[in-house]
Image (cartoon, rainbow, N blue to C red; front, side, top):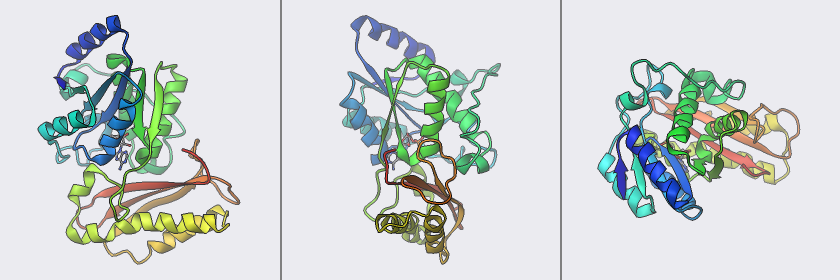
Length: 285
Ligand code: AMP
């Protein structure tokens, strides 16, 4: 497996592939790779000739009080894991290479970024859309894969690709979980033991709504209330939001629904870890 550390080397490498006529798949990540990331690499591996994984802790998607400084960066281990999962190239540029001194162009995807995580993380999706478009321009992938775990991110990227006519196919993959239901996340390493023992309740709450839905409960407000109710006695986390939304547009739903996504964000009390999760009811993501 090759490691490419600069934007200009990545562009040259991509040009060299053009002559060979191979298809290229991109897996954008911030590193600290876990089985969720590796499932994306394996999935796209089966669809294209060359898999490129970007490992870049993107400074412009972090808010001022967020965890940019402490975000885990086990680079050597990541490269090893990516290679074993079938990645051909890790692309890991320096922030100053991606955002030189005079950098001043940003991608703002409107509307779909207003709610859910966008409401409490101003500028986050602007940073995400900007870095992803830069990767698309540097790497020219034929396809790129994103996890359902970050459902709003997927919706933002899909919107951007459609609006700006990006010649990239967007693929998604399901959420990979621990045995106890906790969605894998690079941020799970911040959790205290006490928090770690309680946070599987986040997914259990979503599961409660899912079983109500399967038994015939289609009322959006009651489904949302069931999830909130299941969190009411949590000791180690507080709810930032529980929303029931349209699977594609992420518009809030009320009244009867035949399909929906329930999206959740919580923050733990001691380590202040922000965790997100979601579940799709009666439809495909
Ligand atoms: P990140 O490194 O957190 O920016 O995530 C990189 C990609 O991995 C994104 O497309 C995420 O949605 C995806 N991802 C993160 N956690 C999981 C998970 N538990 N299961 C599947 N995909 C995930």
